[in-house]
Image (tube, rainbow, N blue to C red):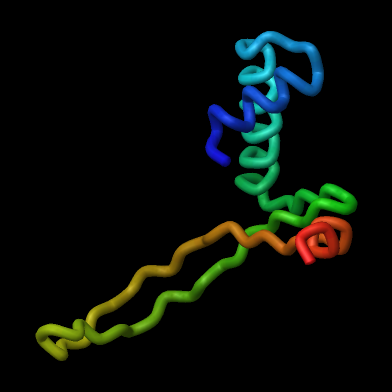
Amino acid sequence: MNRGDLINKIAQDTNLTKAQAGDALNSVLNSIGGALKSGDKVTLIGFGTFSVSKRAARTGLNPQTKQKIEIAAKSSVKFKAGKELSDSVN
């Protein structure tokens, strides 16, 4: 399922227009992104939890030249599925 399919499903299930469903989806995704950017954790009971994981800077190895390279620190988004979501796919 891609973004367009999800918008169509939301529109169908809620009797909204596709434009309204798209706006609703954008609002949800922007809210989650904003919360994560400010360092908060987002928990949707039964669905899962979005959080930010920080990776420290480290030294890597270029596989072609075997030279050491510095890999910068970065933050990445993690998602842990909730029990209901996990149970629904088993």
